[in-house]
Length: 109
View 1: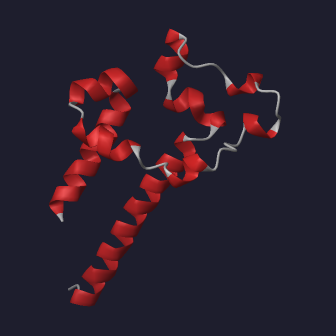
View 2: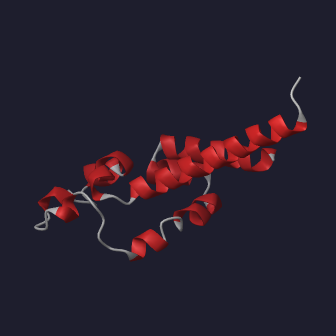
């Protein structure tokens, strides 16, 4: 039978891994190399162009605007205020599923 310490360690591991996945999602989202993965609708509609056309070699792969690293989680409060239909239209079904998992996890603790 699990002791209270075992349950606490398990909860800590789960919370830290959920936080790490959220940070990885947010950090990878701002990298130019991953634009086509995170914003495919914007490429199809022509609202966004490929970063590979940039003249700077490093800027094709790494976001050099350091301001975005301090504000990379600003999308979260805005997304929480949107309806599910708005999220699907704006960012896709995968983003709506991710937010649903996040919301359910937030309310289960």
